Amino acid sequence: MRIPEEPYKINERITAKEVRLVGENIEPGIVDINTARAMAKAQGLDLVEIAPTAVPPVCKVVDYSKFKYEQKKKQKEIKAKAQKVVIKEIRFGPNTDDHDFDFKLKHATNFLKEGSKVKAYVHFVGRTIVFKERGVNLLNKFSEALSEFGKLEMEPKLEGKRMTIILAPTPSKTSK
Image 1 (cartoon, rainbow, N blue to C red):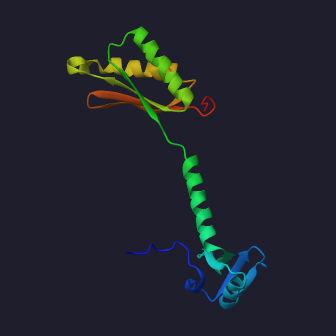
Image 2: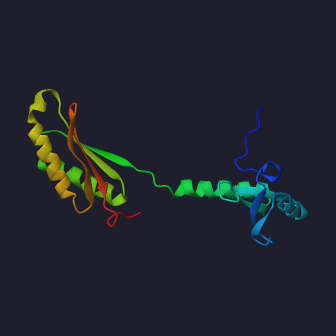
Image 3: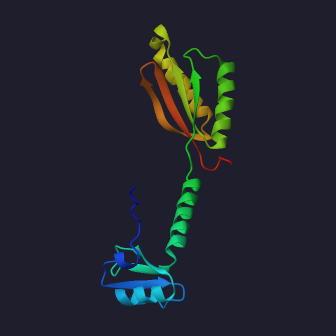
């Protein structure tokens, strides 16, 4: 069984000669490492190196298990607040009717209002690849119709049998 390595140096593992000491019930300042360890031990707490790159290193007098718990909690909060990008796809054919276009436009508007990105593409099947300009026109018309809800992130680009654009929501129009 392997013991996982601790992310912070504590007590005897701190190698610096002197440290900047911080913590509750502690007068902040630069002290000798042995004095710092003694102060921590006197309070029944640990000496934890929180900024090893500082000169001198910053150490905090704190209960190490409680400190680790707080750090883990902060990391979880940061991860929860990170926004996940959702991409919704809308497919067209090169001969899409106006009614179908309007229907898909309405869906794309809702997706952008939600805050999702929209990837719209024209799928060319068989010999329809000869109508590339129809695909470009259709995607340009689509991006212009959605210009108040989202901005064009990627110009029409042909990749194999698909011509694709990506629209990102404008920050002011999005709602949670």
